[in-house]
Length: 382
Ligand code: FAD
Ligand code: GLY
Image 1: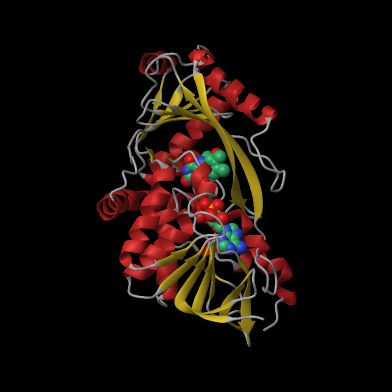
Image 2: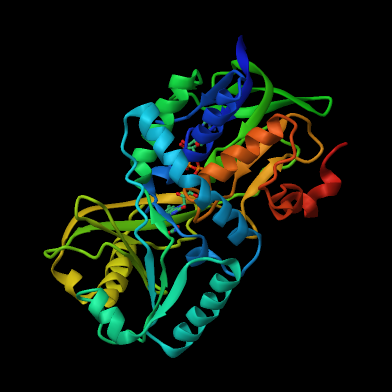
C-alpha cells in the first residue's frame, strides 16, 4: 500500500559531489532540502575520480566547456576553505599544475594549438622544451618532445571532498538519507510534484533535481528518459620507490595525479561496457602500460589499489544542466562526464540560481537540457 511522506521544498536525487553540492548551496540560501541516495553518499563516480581540476587540459576546443570550467575553477579555493572550516575534513586542494607531455610530432602540434587558446583565455601556460621537461620531472620518458605546462591546474582529494560536502550540507540543515533509492518522479499536469521510492512511498517536493550521475537515465516517470550513459573508467594507485613529481603528468594515453601521501593515481580507461563492474585485467594492464611509458621508473612502483567508476556521459559530451523541457519544477544536473569534480562549484551555484528563479550568470546556454531531448521533442507532451 503506497504511503505518503512529507518531502521538502527541494529534493535532490543522488548524493554524489554534484547532488551534495547543490543541496548544500540550496540549503545555504534558505530552502529545506532532502537528498536521497541509493547507496552511500559519495560512493559513485565522485569516489572513483582522480581529482584533477583541469579546464584547459580537458577542453576539446575553446568553447562553453572551457569557459564554464574556468569559472568553476575560480570558485574552488573559497569552496575548499569553506568546506574545511565547516566540516573539519581536509580536501587537499593543491595548485599543483599539470604538464601535458608530447611523445609524437602530431601530439606536439596539438599541444601548441592548446597553448594558443590558453593565451587567448588568459590561462597561465607555457611551453617546456625537452631538456627542461627532463630536468623538471625525474624519470620522465626519454622520448618526450616537450610539454605544455598548465600552471593554474589544481588537484583535490575527491573522496575527502564528498565527505566534506556531506558533513557541511548536514551542518547547514540539509537532510541526507542514504540507502534510499528513488524509482521515479511524479508529474501531474506538466508539473513535477515529487517522487516515489522503490517501496512505493511517495514524497512531495516543491521541485526535484535529478543528479543521479551515470544512473540518471534509469529514473522513471519522465516523458523521455534522460539520455545519459555510463562510461567506465579504471584506475590504479601506485606508490613509487622515489618521491614522485608534485605536478600532474599527462600524455595522450595516461595521467598521473599525485596525492600528498606520496601515491600517484594512474588513469584511466574509457570503456563503453554499460554498468559492467571493473576493474578488468585488460583495463589495469592498459593503464599501467601507458603510465610506465610516461614515467618508466614506475615499473618498480608498488600497486596499492585498483578501482573503477562510471562517468555520466551525455550524447555530446557536455553537461546537462537546467530545467527538464516542458515540465515545471524539474531540474537536471547530470552528464558531467570526465569533469564533474571540476564543475561541482559552478554547477551548484547555477542550479541554486535556477531554483531561485534567477538567471544563472555562469551557465552556458549550450548545456540546456532541451538540446539532448531535441530529437524526441515531438514525443514530449505539452
Ligand atoms: P556520482 O558521483 O556517480 O553520484 C551519483 C549518485 O547518485 C551515486 O552516489 C548513486 O548511488 C546515486 N544514485 C543513482 N541512482 C539513484 C537513485 N535511483 N536514487 C537515489 N540515488 C541514486 N572529474 C574531474 O573533474 N576530474 C577528474 O580528475 C576526474 N577523474 C575521473 C576518473 C574516473 C576513473 C572517473 C570514473 C571519473 C572521473 N571524473 C573526474 C568525473 C567525475 O567523477 C564525475 O563527472 C562526477 O563524479 C559526477 O558526479 P555525480 O554526483 O553526478 O555522480
Ligand atoms: N577526467 C579524467 C577522467 O575522467 O578520467
